[in-house]
View (tube, rainbow, N blue to C red):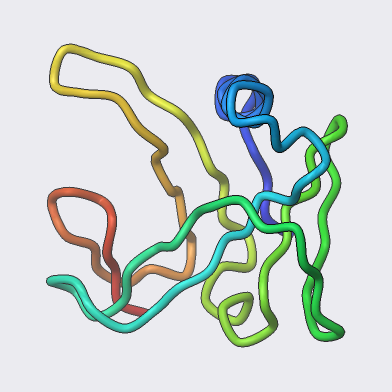
Length: 107
């Protein structure tokens, strides 16, 4: 399962409304690259594939392709807003190592 904290959920809902994508899905995945080997990918998508894992949380559908899910199962997505910047933060129990920016990891 992949989950959103309350703060991340609120931010996602706000962005979806601002971008007029209230009926879309939040898609999370991974792709090769970054300083640690794999990058997190997060965005809106209005398509579903047969192999997608779907998690619904208070009206937000979070989807993930099966290949990425192997690396993301158990991940919690949070949102932080601070002096050094703001953005989504991934707490991934499968990451053996991550870079300083928190956007790439190795498993």
